[in-house]
Image (cartoon, rainbow, N blue to C red):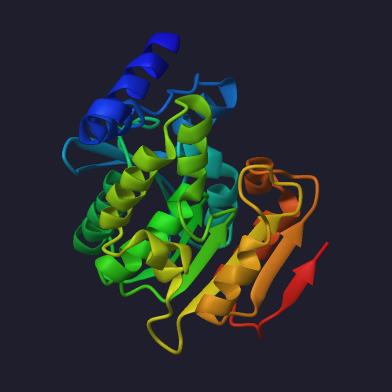
Length: 286
């Protein structure tokens, strides 16, 4: 790692564009998390859906009924969404959890925001062609959440009901991670920000302003769920996104952090209730 830091430091001084390319390359390899017993059990209980998006991609499906798509975050996997997906299946939905490029059961080693956005669009197109023309709702966690909301704009998803869990208003956690792990200079980080923004069809400043969360139609609904002890994504992002989208659907927990929120029984119940019903908006903070 010290050698990489040295090379980046030298390139930053003599050739910032090469430093950008190396940074982008190093950041494109998500860690493959070990498969746990519960992952095996979740996979065996699901039906596999395969489709192509620059290589074979896999999604896991539970249940029958109106389709709900669930997407994990960076270095996550579909089985993280399985407890929520299985509860949705029990409530009469077909819950489909995607593995993004380089994650879980899907092919490839590299990934990034562009791949997240295009993979989700490819799954949406596959579902519309082979399963149902109407996708009832989409649920996204962390980086998957902001990419889901951006993909909805870029690819014009017909879905009108969305749940965002612990997602940033802009992908600044990726910049923070590069700053910590690779010790990338602020000048190169600025170039990285511009590259990321291209994936979202806007500028970095527009991303920071919440561009991915712009509301398209009056009947579009967004439920925001955050934990006050999340150390990866500030829970106050909920208020920023809430103002941009103009939604009153907000729920906050405490003590779950960034990942355990996905397995919290109360959170799952709230998500299923939101996906299932047309109740009036509410704001809740535990």
